[in-house]
Image 1 (tube, helix red, strand yellow):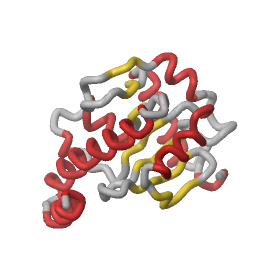
Image 2 (spheres, rainbow, N blue to C red):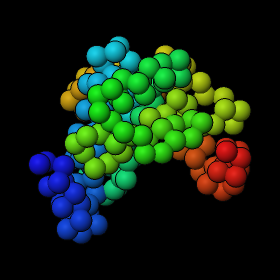
Image 3 (tube, rainbow, N blue to C red):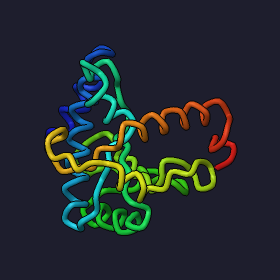
Length: 173
């Protein structure tokens, strides 16, 4: 089916084309996840690579992704996990802040976040991100909440600090 063709495409393309293929598959994963969660009135916010591909890069093929990171409000995280599992998504990894799930169709996992960072690291509660975000029904072909650009910048800075062994680094998880 379509998923097998996408995997073959990802394996046979050069790096640039892998980026474009990852973008197209990533959009399909985002759309599938958003549709499941919309049935339960759970909003979804695209993060990291999929958001950067859509809004920052002139050509999304320049920025390959290996998962589709999204945020749901912390208070609705357990319901979101249940809704996705009930729809056939399977858990393929998790920690205190996020769970990676595979759809029954697409090869990239949906990285479902309850917060941008581990608790106690940076003060960016998910409800505040959703309050500052804007509903966007056009960018991804499905209703999502786009993050405020300043929150995107704060997330990038926070992950830079994390990658340098600062607050919220893997050694603290």
